[in-house]
Image 1: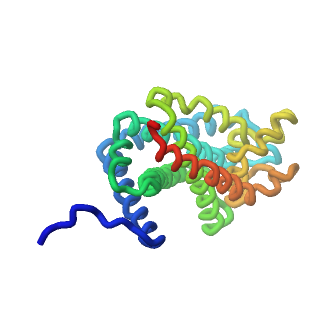
Image 2 (image 1 turned 180 degrees about the vertical axis):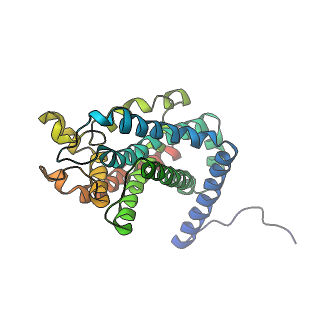
Image 3 (image 1 turned 120 degrees about the vertical axis):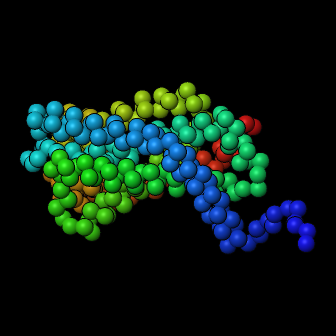
Length: 275
């Protein structure tokens, strides 16, 4: 029996969805194999937030004050969760830029593979790694005295908001990685670090100057962090401004907006690469 010389082209919407999901599964599996063979990649992404927990929790924590009172380490941990989700963009940008520079992306584009499936495979792999990061950082937080006081349901909702933020930022990382060289991608942390500081991650916006307070309160990261503090039952004032009082709504709205902008930009850039 002779084999077909060409692959069947999906014609219906359902077939195209199955095609994209199948390709996404294969691509994400490829990425996870690389991480399994090179575990130092995961260890390096975990080292920085763990060091930050110890540094701010114990070295600087004794001198930090929480607006409204409360233990600083419990105030700190939701900020560390959010910062870890943001810093995950660095690995996304670097891997995507490296694949493009080494011709891996061109090989995918030359094959009968769904463009959305290839990018979604990257997203799935990054989300699995981010979930692992969040679990390990949670265990670290429990060791330093952090607790989720409002029960399992709100805690899982907070984790969902953190992963929703990470999902939206993966698309930002893909869009940037398809435009940068690996050398340029290595400097992606430079704009991200001040972004995580101009927020409520380490200091209450209520303690900042008025002009800086407005920037911090409307930072998308601040919305997620404040929503997590509310859901975890951790200290940190949530009143004083519209953004602070509606943190949970903004923690959903900001990632949806970011995804709506960068998902189509990423797909378009992938399809027009090298043109």
